[in-house]
Image 1 (cartoon, helix red, strand yellow):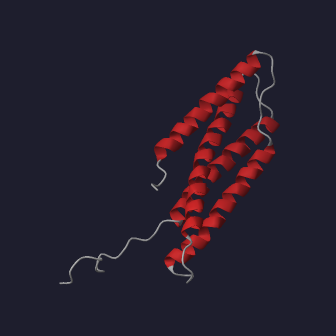
Image 2: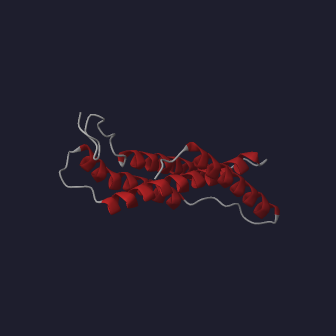
Image 3: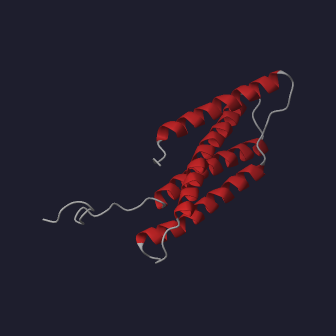
Length: 157
């Protein structure tokens, strides 16, 4: 599995930003209410970010030799997949929060403190989720192998 690069994260961020801004614009022009993310979204994203990193720490300890048990490959694959999905979801949710903020600041009426606090909390926790996903991916990386060791099939000099 390849490491997460910046291109998909930036693409998901831009998709989320445009989608949220246009959705807010369409709903408001038809007389609907402005969508403001609830504060529970921010708390949930923060809790998921902590869990992702905590799930990756035992893998790092086993890989570096601090624990003697072998690494369970299925557990490691699941944690890496969760880390990658967390960084992708965090990028999309960061874009959604940024789109809401962009719409709120583009209106002639200034937003209330409640609206800003909830949108900023979502943006902050989504950025933390991206960071947690990337950190968990880094924790699951195997160290490079020694070049001095003989490989199977090569004759000894």
